Length: 102
Image 1: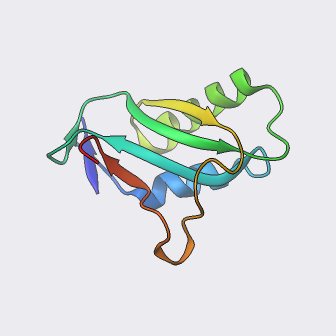
Image 2: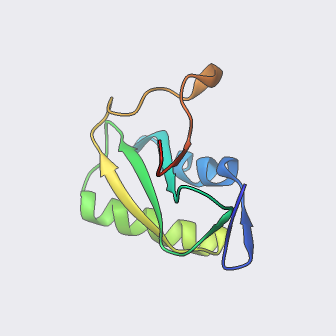
């Protein structure tokens, strides 16, 4: 969990929002946080993997940022990455939250 302007944010909640955009996204994502601390200033950087039916990437980015803002009450800076760039998150294969120090 991390905190953005007094709002507790759970990575699983971010995952739910991103998964709601399938097949425009694959559901894979990575949250980039500062090196230490649980408090994060907005916008929160989030990498999201494009899906097989991504469509207009600018519109997808705006839609993801708006959905996160409306459902989770924080601003995100979504960066779309090509399908296959992020490793699958199932069975603890990859961290979804990454600190700036590694």
